[in-house]
Image 1 (cartoon, rainbow, N blue to C red):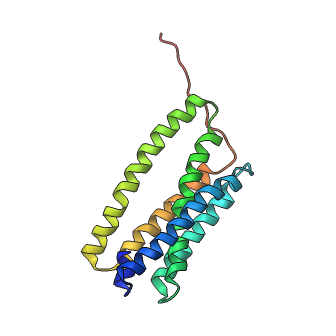
Image 2 (image 1 turned 45 degrees about the horizontal axis):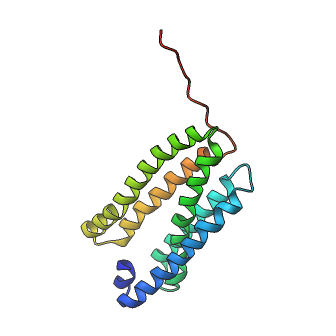
Length: 167
């Protein structure tokens, strides 16, 4: 909404665009994992999600129209990605115990990054007075997500931890 208000939207208009984007994110969080779960390898659908998100960011930064569309595309990314991450934990684990271990670790890291992300993007915007720099941080995040996708979304299972007996 702050970006949209800087672009001339009223608070109500910016809030409406955000609400529409949240609806898209919610729908994607429900639909994308159902589709992805039908395949053994989820890299293609994950790369599509990253691409949609990237197109939204590029649209916001390079055009002066269709803000609602670009915002919906941007928000489709996180909506899809959280559900895909949860799906990967189940699909890649060999046991319920392993799923619990991976889930605890990855959700801890993921939620810390998610909590710090908006603060960092806001701080970058405040320091540079530029949405381009702030959104560039999001683009770096997408690049990191694409790199991790090549591992997390492939058709493989995690190896069980090695149990050693005390000597």
